[in-house]
Amino acid sequence: MSELCILVVDDHEVNLLLAECVLEASGMQVLRALDADAARAVLQAERPDLILLDIQLPGVDGLALAREFKADARLAGVPVIAFTAHAMSGDEVRFCAAGFDGYLAKPIEVARFAQQVRAFLAS
Image 1 (cartoon, one colour):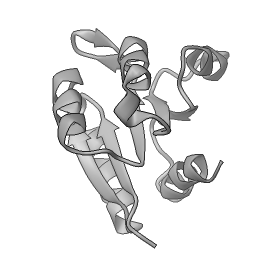
Image 2 (cartoon, helix red, strand yellow; image 1 turned 90 degrees about the vertical axis):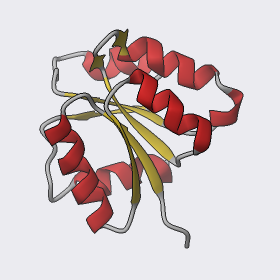
Image 3 (cartoon, one colour; image 1 turned 45 degrees about the vertical axis):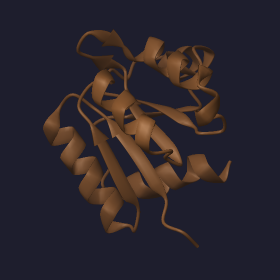
């Protein structure tokens, strides 16, 4: 089985590093982006198996960026998962209605994070 490739888009370096370390420790390849422009540049060169996308990024709404990714034919079939610290009642429904394929709250549960990411690829 080939190594899974995950793009993590988060403007907080600590969150990005933690997600990267946990996913890499479980055998996944991780691509990183601190903002929307960096994410677009990564996606010009790579096609990840899944995108974890922070909702609040500098200069762009994560919901708008998710719609942009979903409209890109080259990324068809790539799940885009909302990745946010703003876990409020109803957020999962709102994010999925906006086009996300799922939702993961921060802070991550280190012991379960890789398993949660893999579950989005199994569905």
